[in-house]
Length: 422
Image (cartoon, rainbow, N blue to C red):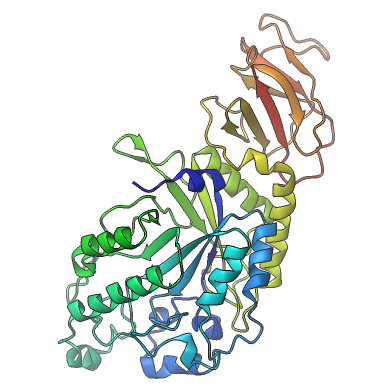
């Protein structure tokens, strides 16, 4: 089995969705949503010219945010490839960009110490042998469907496996293979969804393992994988399969769209994003946070602003994230615990008045401090039989640790208390 230690330690990664759909600037599924033909979609290929593309700048922004690994879309469902694949002409080198865009990306992020991951779609709406099904952009064009009934997915699968081989032999050691996605459960009557048998998933997985034995593979081939990938939601607790905890990573967008979407203004706040990260680690998960660069090859200012905010928080509080996981202790309301060895981290989503009460910790903590500045917090264990009167506290359960807090919260988005366990 591949070693997951680095993945469970690093906890925070960058997702990049980038392709010719950034020219349309209306979501990466635009070809499907607007049922665009290959001929009409060609204008985005013909005008893709990311003249401001600087992957070193991307890597520096991600590193400053505290991210440790990256996953980039080598090919999305529209079939466009960022690298100079020998198996297709539908690639960056044939656009006005005139160059391989993946190779400098890998070099830039690797030079900054990032683990490298490749997203690769097992769907391809541009390939002439990929069947016209209920997700295909031409699904409602009856004449097109009739004319293309003879498509042979086995020929497409040769292409899929061949491109996967290129990705895993031409760019050095790859740490994550992020396939997307199987949909065998869907049935439109006139067509059915695609799944593991269509992709020859076992054969594909065996090749991946042979070429890169240490790689982590996600769970979207229809045969399981090394990690579960909840998308656009936060699990209610640790993810389990048959009662056993599993490795998982929530993939989340900044504004609801994976690819560049000029008019989508549903930007999540920096506070919400930091809380997502903390919440995931508290439930033994990772956060893969997405940026969709624009057609000229730059991150949007709103994305950069949020990544800077996260980085400022991570600079002070990273040790409550890296190498941490869930705790067996139960936090108070509006709080999350993460833990690493004998250090327990209390993340305060809401700042209480003067005191916070920590059940079960009355005899377990040797020292407490605010993590942002290392300042001591006074501790006490209140007699559970003590009556409350005026400013005398009471009404807490036995073995509850009470921390005395300043009236004003520290000037950070999510305050963290570091508890040193006995």
